[in-house]
Image 1 (cartoon, rainbow, N blue to C red):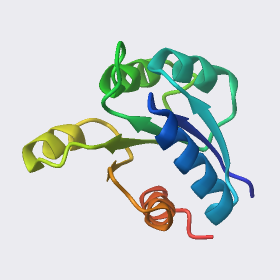
Image 2: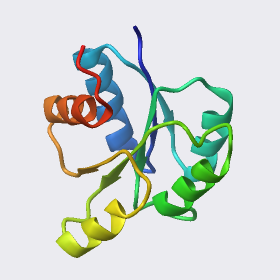
Image 3: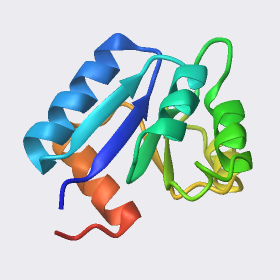
Image 4: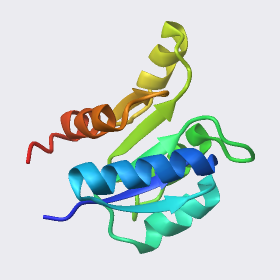
Length: 125
């Protein structure tokens, strides 16, 4: 079954790499949003299997975006994986207290990203 992933990241390079990697390696359809607001709007109108959400973004950061997604009955059941460049253990522990499905740190290698996502989401096809 085709999986639909929404990637919310303000960096064009990351969006391109992730989109190409997930499509080429896993065969997943990847929708992209450049901001939290855009991502929330897409999540409300598109059927999604998961959301990859960058933590550090201007205007509305990943945490604020996550809170809005979780407060909305339409989007609250979509699994969210945070993408973060924060490598400090205490910051990572703070992020794990949020109701997220998983946490993936940047930088990452494309095949590892697919494997980590499958593991976190329990998609073992």
